[in-house]
Image (cartoon, rainbow, N blue to C red; front, side):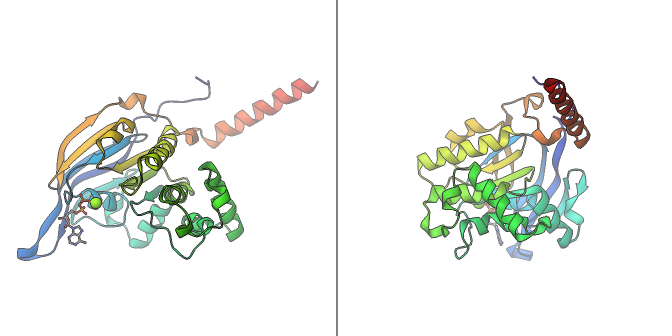
Length: 271
Ligand SMILES: Nc1ncnc2c1ncn2[C@@H]1O[C@H](COP(=O)(O)OP(=O)(O)O)[C@@H](O)[C@H]1O
Ligand SMILES: [Mg+2]
């Protein structure tokens, strides 16, 4: 292990749900998609969520992803009370911290792949050219660079999902939420997508993924089974202390020091 790696933040809690309930409808028509739901997620976990259709998996991801708000309960994102902040601030937080991958890819049909991937960077403050460069780099990571100027319909399902994953990670969010990302893919494309998610996870990112495929749970560090809006079983297969440590964990100061060190090494070498 490199001497610069510090491992002190491994067990940091990144997401905390306290007694979250989500009700749809009112009066006699009221039903609960989530009931007094509690969950604590550590940085670097790869959680797979399973459970029958209608048990609340998508509702859960939408609440964690700030796309929906709970009816009651508290949601803490990095210790900040996310369930009670303005919609505007939620949108900002979402853009900065969370990347989404959906079952049906959700690419915008009349935008090229590179434009689709650059969309989350609208909040970044980067100029358009810079956004396209970043998008191109993200696509390159997924071996999709040669498809940059294609439209979504010109790509296979697997390629569209790889583009969608490039879009999810382009702004370097620390949390990736994936709702049945391999649900519409053949087994080969599914394996490719899982390998990409594995790589993103190994870099210290936190992933929460919904799946119906029990075979995929081998990628997870924790498997949660839901039933009727609550947790039925919750099993960690990797100890918190063994979760991957984020690459960007190094403080700017440390990186600066390291650069300086390398520089002085180079100088010495030259002499
Ligand atoms: N927008 C909505 N309006 C009314 N009911 C909803 C809405 N979204 C979800 N539900 C209901 O909440 C329950 C959980 O849905 P969902 O979270 O989509 O389940 P899952 O993703 O596990 O299939 C279901 O009974 C569903 O019908
Ligand atoms: Mg769903």
